[in-house]
Image (tube, rainbow, N blue to C red; front, side, top):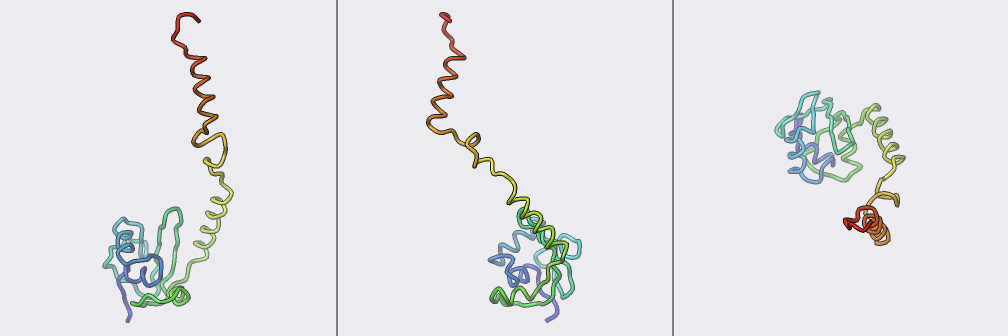
Length: 134
């Protein structure tokens, strides 16, 4: 076997859990083969360069093998080789995500607590009273 549909190959290489998920991502334009946006019926062969965008992660892999069957992960990893640039970029992005602060983890941001809500309402009443007495 020399060629295989890209959706089947992505499924067999374990980039996506089902073939239909792989096909959906291809239709959305998140998969490129040899610098061209792919269609689900596009065939890949050994030596093709595939760019896969999964959320913030962009992977560039070279096709090393073709398989119609989805096997265990160690076997699936032998179907492709990730480029050194892609590995470096992924590690850099992971480091940036790890070092970046999550806004919801600080007390100053996110949903107010019951005490915060009472303080906000108290401050609102003091500052913006509509009464004429003040």
